[in-house]
Image: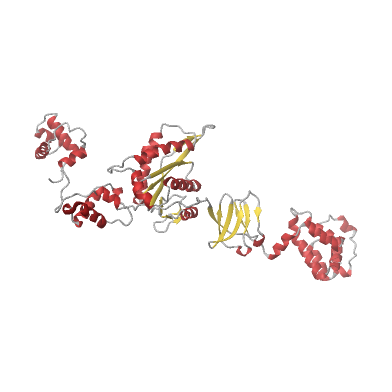
Length: 513
C-alpha cells in the first residue's frame, strides 16, 4: 500500500462523517475538499482492517496509521531490527553498525537481513526521528551546559526585596540525564560552583564541557578560536576535562541543552510558578524533588528513562572525580611598578625585582595570591586586608635588603657614637616626615660618607651644616666634597640666619663662606 495521501486527522473525520453522521461519500468529499475516489478508497481500506467509528479504545492517530499503513518490507529476508536499541548502542565507544549487525544476524539466523539492508533500514528509521536525535553523542563524552531564560523570584523575608534566581542546567549528550539548580547570579563564582555541584551529583566527569558563549565561560567568542575564561579552563583541567564552546549563532551545536532547558522550564519551573520561596535553599530543595521525577520519566518515543540510559551508557564511560575538589581561583594580568609590587584589590604584593615592567599573571583564591611569569610561579603570598602590603626579602635588590635591616634606633645609636652634630643631622632626617622610613635613604647616605671621609670629618661637616641651618644629606655631602669642614668648621650663624625659620632647604648666609 502506498503512503497515505491524506492526514490521519482527515481519515478520522472521514470515518466519523461516514459512520456517525451518515453522510454520503459525495457529501463527505465536498465537506473535506477531497475527491469522491479518495473517500471511497479510505473507507474501503478501513473496512478491510475492521476499523469503524468510534475508533477502538486506546487507538490514537499514530496507532491508526500503523494499522492502516504498515512500514514497507524491503526486499530480502525479513526480521526487523530494533532501531531504537541500535541508536542507543551506537553511543557506546567502539560500537559500530557492523558489530550490531553481526549480533543481530547471530540472533535471527536465516531470517536476518543482509548487512546492506540492515544499514539502509536503520538510516531510514533515523531520518524519521526528531532533528535533535540525529546527532551522535558518545557515552561519557559531552556534558552540555546553559541557563534557562526565565528566572525564579526569591523574596527576602525581612525586607520583601525580590531577587531573581538564575536556573543552571547541565545535560549528558548520550543519555539526556539532567541536572538543574538555582543560583543568585550567573557570575563566574556561581558558574564554577554550579559545575562542581553538578559533577558531584553525577558522580563523575565527562571528557568535554560544551557551554554556550556566556561571559563566565568565554572571554572572546569566535567560531574557530574562542578564548575560554582562565578560571573555567583551570577548573576543567583539575577535573580532567576540556572545554569546547558552542559556535556563536549555531543552535545545532547545543541542541541537546536547548531541549533540556525547555524540559526543565516546562516540567519544573512551570510547576513551581505558584510557589513562594524565601531562600535559595528552599527553591533548590523543590527543584531537587522534581528533578528526580524528571529523570525517572520515560523519554518520548523510547522505552527508557534518562536515569536508565545514564546508568547504562554514561556512568560506565565517564571519568572519576578527583580526590580533592577544585579550589576557586580568579586570574588577572598584572604589571609590577618600580617598587616591584603588584596591586590586587588595593593590596600590594611583592614579586622578584627583576620582573619590574613585565606582564605577569596573578592567581587569586580566598586565602592566597600566586604570581606567575611564563607559567612559572615566581611569588606566593597569604591574602590579607585592604591597604596592607606583603614584601618578601628575597624579592628585594641587595641594597634594599640592607635598607630593611635598619631601624630608627639603630641609625640614632650609630650617629651618637660619632658625635652630637651627626646625631642632630640624623635626627633631622628621621623627624618631620610621614614615616621614619622615608629618611632611611638619607641616613644610609650619611653612613657611606662616614666610611669614605672618616667619622671625624663627617662630624665636622655635620657641625657646619647645623651651624648654617642646612642639616641635609646633600649639604653635608657638598661640605665634605669642597673641604669646607676643614676650613671653617666653627662658623656661627648670623643674627639674620637665626631670624629665619629652621628648615632643611634654608641654608643661611654662612653656607656660602
